[in-house]
Image (cartoon, rainbow, N blue to C red; front, side):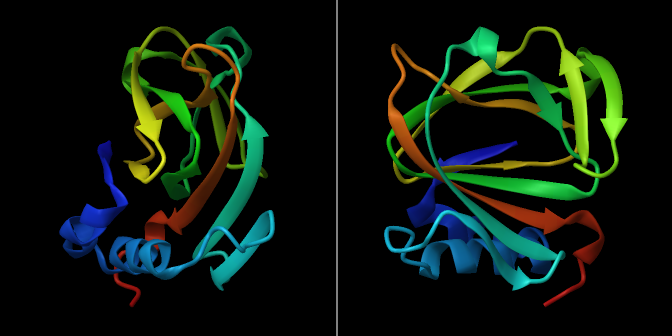
Length: 154
């Protein structure tokens, strides 16, 4: 997992061409004016999901991981806790191929994602997004989905 501020996103662009493209798109887009929902950048290889929601108590947020995508989770407005753990440290449940969702249970650590912060989560990074810090608050979050098989895409 990588955790940083959007202003430092360029630091990580060299990790892979696909991740670099995602981070450049993240930094160049005015997320205040984007409608909620899916925004295609490169079809199923790279797209953004824009969501407005209220954070929830941790016991209402399940662990998840993905096999086909790297998540770049960016908090544009608000703040939340993000649970994280290596998938091997959790009890892994069923994989939902259609939703690209691995469910899991167990314990992990939490970090705070404030406005302007992002996390990069690889398939081995289980996560619990959208967790309230003290009480539920509104958040605008953008999740860029970067296909893991596009490491050589430009």
